Image: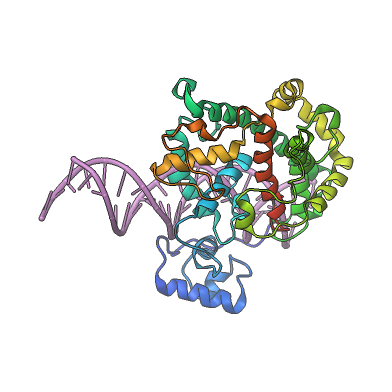
Length: 355
DNA sequence: AATTTGCTCAACCGCCTTTTT
DNA sequence: CAAAAAGGCGGTTGAGCAAAT
């Protein structure tokens, strides 16, 4: 048996909200909390469906919403997270305090996506649409990096999706709630982490995501650049505040990997991309201080006059896109890229659905 | 001044997942 | 366990506005 019949949709108002309606909704929620969205409209004296009320509240009326232009840091975060997560706006939104998923989605669709397209990059696959367009100068390198990234990510996301399904079957169960602050997210984040971990060197399969990030970022360490994990250089750290201990995250993920990792690795290993990369070794990991260049390119492409100040680097408007390239130093490039991602991880709220 | 074009963003729609009965 | 409601998410639309012609 199901629940009692749903709300009758007769006479429900649609379209833009009036200030009076906003006031009613606001007053009600401030006083009682939203409780059941379905019951709320009647209690609050609104001729709206609960879904509409929820949307209005979460996207507009909530007091902790920041409106207005996105900062460069926010843009960069979105781009990085989109490269990592795809169109998972709600997940991305958890890393941009005070921004709603709807707003981020809109911003991506109206701004960032166009910049990608302008660069000749498919915003869906993140692969260059036409290599010929990027045949010379620095963009070609970024495009190549982008291609690696896209391949890597698509495989990773595929595995991630599989793992999510698996873990649900394995009885991560009770925690399936969608609440924004409870355990289930930790399970999910571990899945995410362990999935990514599988892209590490084949021999090191049973290591968590963050280890592989560290391995890559610290790959430089092996090459003499190490020890910077505690102080990632990404702009995200300043954007998101002080990070939590990455070690703790890694450790908890490690535990999970021990339980699930072996089987997951098998699945992942079945992915052609993974096999390809495994065979090719670390050089085929998304290369380039990829996101940094990627976002540099995007941001500088947008209006042609915006400059990056986050790390003191200027955008490459016309001065040779490769100006910041460091001679194909993959380790260095990877380090920067993964520092960015690691930083995101480390600075993520503890209840983040992703990390 | 009138019209067209492009942009932004709030809101809706439909699907999927979770929860409840 | 199955059915159905509720919640949540991502894709899409369209009204309103500004810039361009």
